Image 1 (cartoon, one colour):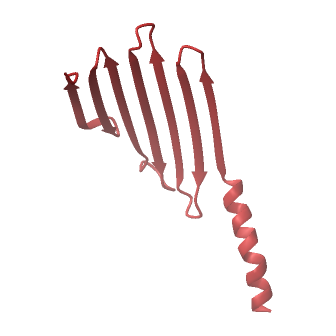
Image 2 (cartoon, rainbow, N blue to C red; image 1 turned 90 degrees about the vertical axis):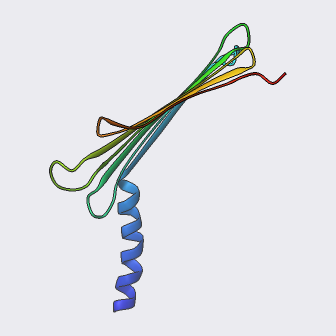
Image 3 (cartoon, rainbow, N blue to C red; image 1 turned 45 degrees about the vertical axis):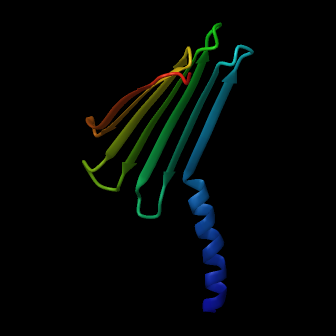
Length: 125
């Protein structure tokens, strides 16, 4: 009897896990090389912890061939209970123009900046 019960329990748990996940994505591009990607995922595990992630990727290319790339990530983890949600936001930006690259990175946890970087590189001769 125990073997039969376990064989039914595993598929049921798998279905319950799949039912608690939500994923979506949208993509948009044009002939100039610009693109926008938005991804959203949300899931809840067996302990009641909800994880939500939103990712936005944007690439802009101008008529001179300069490229600006932005990637923003917002990740929230909310364990079951009150006042224990953690939100992490990451913003990355790279600008490639005239052979030079400028890069910036910022990471915030619950609204407090924990990492911040700005870098510039020169073109190779």
